[in-house]
Length: 320
Image (cartoon, rainbow, N blue to C red; front, side):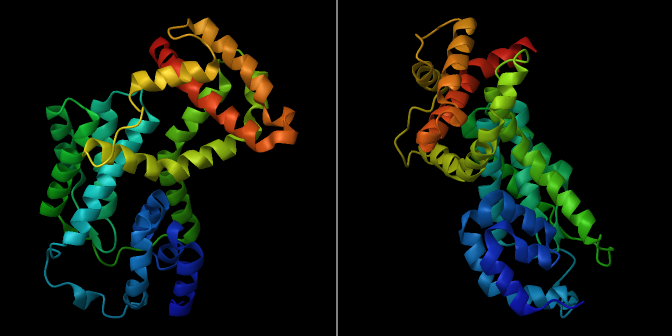
């Protein structure tokens, strides 16, 4: 069935930041990229408006072969910029979501996957081993520091451009359920670390299953807030690293000090004190017990979860 331009415009307007128009046109890599970056941080979604007629024509098989000017795609400054930006975004997201995972592993892997995702948009692709190797080697030179996201993204993007190629034509397209299944798995791989951080903060310890179940009603809101605010947090950290913004109290030691303050315990308190204060306060501020002040209770409940995650999460990871 042919694709209609009017339907594509409608999906762009209704669910553009989530990539619905790309999903409709069979551009699954582009759809996933928009899902993970909220429409290319907003700017990409607006730019899609001018490209929709060409994409609809390509989806209907009109003029697609003739658009290839050779065996290697032309160098695109826009794609290169997107690879660098998304690579840095994925690297910062890994640092925010997985602070207990060694950055020499999590950060370059996330950077490389971000660059490869942008490389696979449209009819192009790149060589995954070369891109990942560039990201890991560059991160190793900077000893896995957060600042390494910029040079790692640059190196991985340059490697992706050097090894750019067209996708093989004529490959059979999976049916829609299979495509949605693969997109769901990819999105879950990105969102699961963030959800785990919220769940681990709410669960406390494994010996408190009833407390964990009681925290479930507020978890979807907390997870959604983390996913939606992640681009802003990543952009803020990048601006601080590049010197364009004054740093917030975002270092690990300052985060721990704020966490102690939220839990109402002195700095350096023992793990037992952290756990006891957390359990007492979540009972006080549980949304189910504060329906007369629901918004304040949800805010405090999420703050308590994040504070407990900062103080207890690394200890549990080290113990495991």
